[in-house]
Image 1 (cartoon, rainbow over the protein chains, first blue to last red):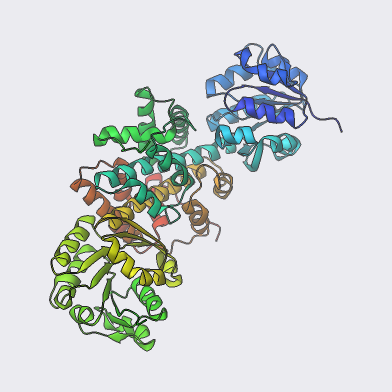
Image 2: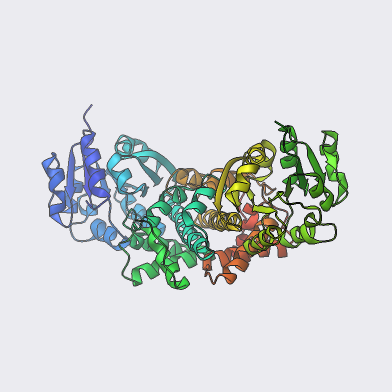
Length: 299
Length: 299
């Protein structure tokens, strides 16, 4: 059976390794990126270059996009020589970006009108999951389109969930970020609370691991912070962006989220401090400022 | 080798099954409870009754206490015919209650003066952990006393961590509750956010389980809430009490915890609503009120 021709647009930290996994799975791959140099590895591995997003679409059956925010996605899809200009009936569009659910619904509508089925398919699992092809993928859109694209999804992800109609994948990703942000802030608060109370923070973490507070965050992040390591991982600037998506969407639907509103502010503060490139666990710096103290480290 | 004689005071939801596990492990057990009838099962199983806390202490080598709040503990220890009146040099006091770290430090000091080593040893794991002897126990106090009491601890708990000096066990338990409360509130916010966004909540939970947001709370609580089950589990009133301990202690040590402050308020609201006897995940009701909506259930 001939493999479907795939396009991938947006070859950043996440997109590049995801595109590479699609290529490795044997799909003929055409790529485009605003900064062309980022495509070099993929082209060396056998991918074709296209000069515009429209050209990617005209050559392929499924087009993936992976960009950092809503305006970037809209520009690539609907700007000059955008994906929609090269699209053709029966094509499938898969957007791996994390953007507003309302934008994903608009994208679905506009492509639906030209006979293209669009899936919103944001991912979770970070650059390591992207490299290893073990991402969780949360999908909104038509079940038939997902079924057709499934062999490609299986090349990039381990857990693929069809959440619902267009936008539902973005809602799930937003919900995910509500919990992640809450854990990051709570982790920061409990570590500084323990330190200010005069107790060894590492021992406190050891004592509470695996109990009712158990979470991936506590399993992984405190030991990095205690070693003085605040490198990403998942950047605070992206956590801030994702929480701004949550709060925008909450306003659209009159959802009241007091905890997330606070956490969103703390991550916006990381950007204001010029620390957006640090890990999301580095939000502890906002709490260090409020507490006039620094977390003691054992490097 | 003769087994140490053990006393257990406070035979509530947690204390009664913990005392039973000590008895089953073969330790001669003397018990006291303000409501005597709660001791019936233990006495039927071979425990001795004592008329006062002092009498428990005078007859035993290690005295356990397990009461619901700081004033109750101080009354049992230092009130009329309190534990300290029957204490004797070399005795060990183990307090399984969750109380303020500063109170545990005071208890340590006052017992230290009469030759008794006091351990603060709050537990996590709920009534099921208490019954099965699988509690996590967070211990503050002298290592020698913990070592001596360890055979008894092993009858009631699975994971026993010596966190540090007197009060350190309470600090770890408080830190644990900071994270648990944050997860309960975030879970409530993300479920109502998904529902208001028009997406199936159960599918969202399924999509985000096992990813970066993974936690015991998400693994267990949403399916109960979606089934319309808000029974405890761990009561909201106890979560509120534990968070008030956190905030009191934060004030003592000038720790600034904005997220926990908010979560503490939401749990105090559960008590104000007369819903303190519901599970801590039932804090979603506070968010339902703010959102003028109810979580849809599939009973």
